[in-house]
Amino acid sequence: MNTIHSRSQKPIIHTPGKRKVFMLFVLAVVVSISTFAFGRYETPNWKLDATVKNVDFYHAVSVCNNKKAVFLRFVNKNSKPVTVSFTEVLKTSAGTNEIPFGGKKKITLQPGETLATNCSENTCAECLLLPEQAVPTHKVEVKDFEFKELQVNL
Image (cartoon, rainbow, N blue to C red; front, side):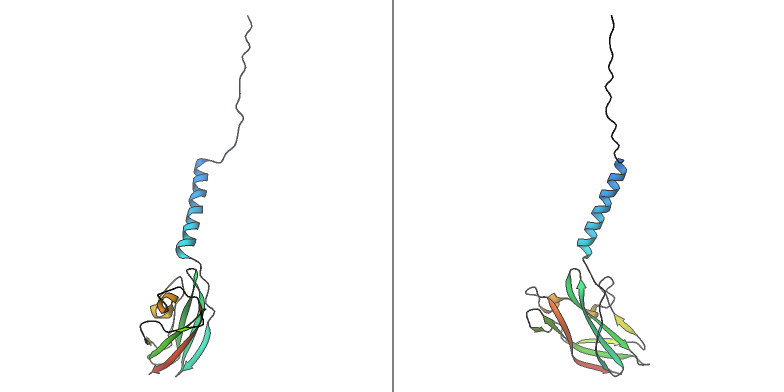
């Protein structure tokens, strides 16, 4: 009696290793989370507003955490420390000029110091103005900024 044995072979399918697939998945999740957690930001395009007693006052309207914010920068070109004071005026998309809560700001600058901040490293709390600081009751978009009542005390 002759018996025929048939061997059934499964097709060979090459698939990436489970470890490789897992690592790609983890990378995709990390990129997604970092985009949502930290948001988008731009490098500020500084505009010189005024020079008072050898101190330069700059501002930039730029994106930070997916919303427009105002960045401030001060350059003390004096050989002595100075104290600067000013009032901020935030110009909004609604056409209003808003003065943030807290009133007049005061900052001391050392000789030759440049004080500024950016979105990724907020090293100067007084140098960053977010729209909700000026208008906490509803969302507004920042259009521009203006320094008022600039004073420099040597």
